[in-house]
Length: 170
Image (tube, rainbow, N blue to C red; front, top):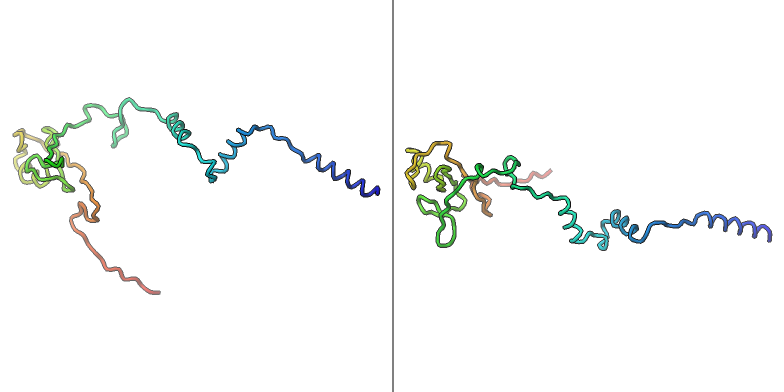
């Protein structure tokens, strides 16, 4: 009996030595679990948490930044445009009245007129005079606007080239 009693007392001493008491509260445990177990659905951040975090990190600028330089925009950096629209509210060339879709477009910064590039080439470039206002323009007043894109693969492209795919069998 004595050998059984000794092993039982040794076992009880080992058990008492491994007891640990957690000092963190349930909330602290949950936040630790949230940080480390991001894949659990109940541990995902709520929309309010995300909005609050974004609001704290976001500084609202006095003026919007320039897309080119990132510096705050100034009034003198902006260019006034006179966009003309048809009855369907689509933008049209101020000279010909053709609907502007994905063609090349030119803005005369001095007059604010928006026209198709082909109209500019035929009517403005030879005389460097705005056909709508009659004002003389310089080459520095001519600004080519970025083309619009469509869902077609060839939008804005001058030519489409197709190649036949011939896989090699090795």
